[in-house]
Length: 250
Image 1 (cartoon, rainbow, N blue to C red):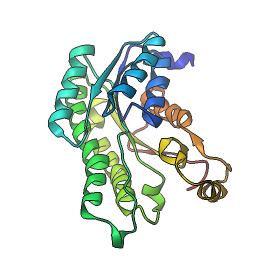
Image 2: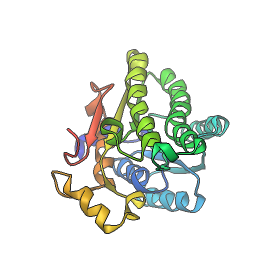
Image 3: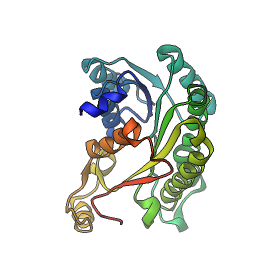
Image 4: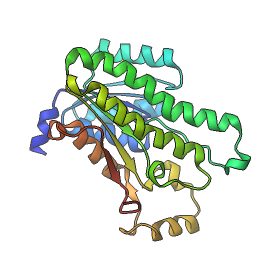
């Protein structure tokens, strides 16, 4: 943990920060001395996470944010810079699923998943790098998924968006490397979150059988990977995908 004090007093902005992996990332970063802004659509949940961050002795900011709306994204980033003076770390975590076999998938379900998961990351990264280029420092971590690598029946929209995140990550990493900005992705496997808790027990058992470590992961385990990529210890890592999936996909 001592080496992570290199992160102390830096500023992170996490989208989808009110619950699940986003909340876990906010707490994990605050634990090592980072001030954290979180964006999301549920004001009550956002405020609860702000209280958790402040109890850890760090400054926090909640901002209502729909990442599909580029104007809202611009305003949110302006607010973070106004409050904290900088943005060192962006975690592009906001994401949705609308699962259906392709044959029956509605166009609006395709569009909304791609808009939130992929265009949302584009809007946020574009705002972040405006700040990071001036600082000549930054860490962008995009949350992809194991299904962006392996595919998954019934998730053509979600898998396409998460595979897109990987290509987006590698391309942006090339664009900004000369300004001391790294861009990486984290691809979680099956993680215990609100999104997976609703699955029937039979489905959960079948999923677990496919995982070599024989269990689902935790949001904290994903957050620790994000925290590492945000740190100066990962300063020579860019354009990479960190797989946190218990061996589900190798």
